[in-house]
Length: 266
Image (cartoon, rainbow, N blue to C red; front, side, top):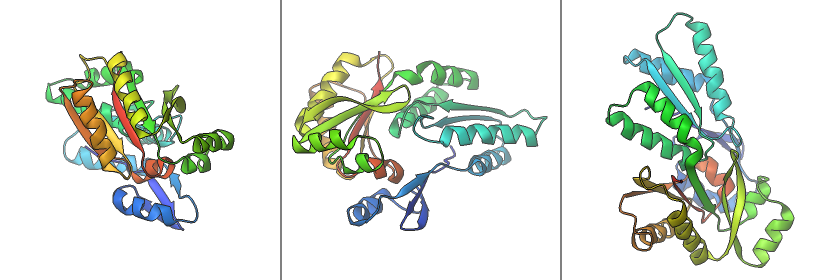
């Protein structure tokens, strides 16, 4: 599996997400930065390099699962890379399919893990494409944050709404709607937010497809562990639960204390 990393620029220095800069290092630095870092998509060349390297190893089928085109340029960059490849190789047996996952962060990661499981079960390339295109809208996201400051700076929330939220100690719970982030609920504190996650999972989960859950966190793994325990005891979920730290690019917007959850909804 190849990875085309996102890029982040901090105080004039550009890093590749989780390659040149680890998430732990980033979240240690984040509170001390005077300006919010800027982020950028992978270049088409980074995708082409992955394809060229894999072709040298004998691979001819490429499924590229990208973050939502509504929040990142990664999908457009991958589509351009596909077009460039076929321009350079007009006669080729290589198959390339680019998926706009309509998801962010570990939401697209959920599709990647599921695709890997299906591949282990001998799914064909065409079956993997069909699964991703037919089910990508069903990957359910939830995200709440510890502090609204970074969402304000990155334009994810209005200043007025952020002020009221901070004043009342309300945690906004966000999800994806039409490929973009949207506030779907407001919770008074972490416990209420985690309860909302559990309650919504019980109502929405498509059990025959959700054989695993991804819980994401930015800087505080203990909140993720609390949610995992609640999913096991209160939602009675028996499948695998992955705890995954968010990357530095997503962490730029989420900030400290963020926690997310991903599963397949009905």
